[in-house]
Image (cartoon, rainbow, N blue to C red; front, top):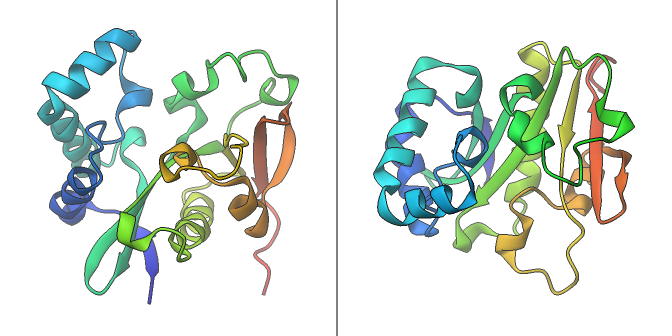
Length: 199
């Protein structure tokens, strides 16, 4: 059975093992990295331990860039999803597909982003992402978010798993997200968290 819950500092070692098992040397730090693309590629290739250390520090500090969801099965951490307040993850919104969208203007207080996903290869296409999405919605609501956004891309079938790191449009829609704007291939998806939780 797959379960998902807020990640905590005790998960640091298991999460690092998940990133290593999937060959993901980013350790979910790209959106917080201040250098350019080449600098980032060099960091991932030559200094992945620095990314890992930053992830652990963020988890331990409880800072806005350290929130996330851990999925578990059979006693192991098998998935991760990053959530953060919009103001703490501006790099995601600065990408050319989103930078000037009307739907992303105005009051952004209380807006959070479900930024990226990582699922162990053995647990892909088994409902892990949907479990992560559901837990992300509940955690964002608990933390006071009034809406949660996602920035997936429409991937031509057959999609490679790695192309779905910002989420599957279909999975997001099944969990209550709707299209709020953007290009059909790069939609902004959003769920309102101010209404009462359905029973």
